[in-house]
Amino acid sequence: MLQKLQNKWKVSAGRLLLIIATFAIGGSLCGYLGRKLMGFTSIDKGIIWVLLYILVVTILWPFCVLLISIPFGQFIFFKAYLKKMFDRMRGKQKMAENTQEKKINIL
Image (tube, rainbow, N blue to C red; front, top):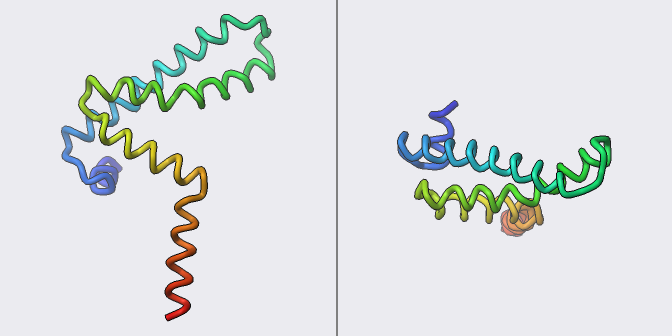
């Protein structure tokens, strides 16, 4: 599995280790900060708290990962990774694929 990631991202084994560590530490920081932020609300731990926590963590995660990527020297990787992820969420990749399919069908 690690070999597949290494090939997909075209990185060395050492860099893959740094990337995985960045994901782990960034995610942990995000969870910690999310709980701290939720402590400022007066919402009891229930379904609304959980839904709000998920929203807070979803918003915080990219910032936490980028912040942690700086000392690990992986900022450029994560900047590109997040850009690609946001493009997929906005549907830009599907539009590009559809355009290529139309070009193929025209030929």
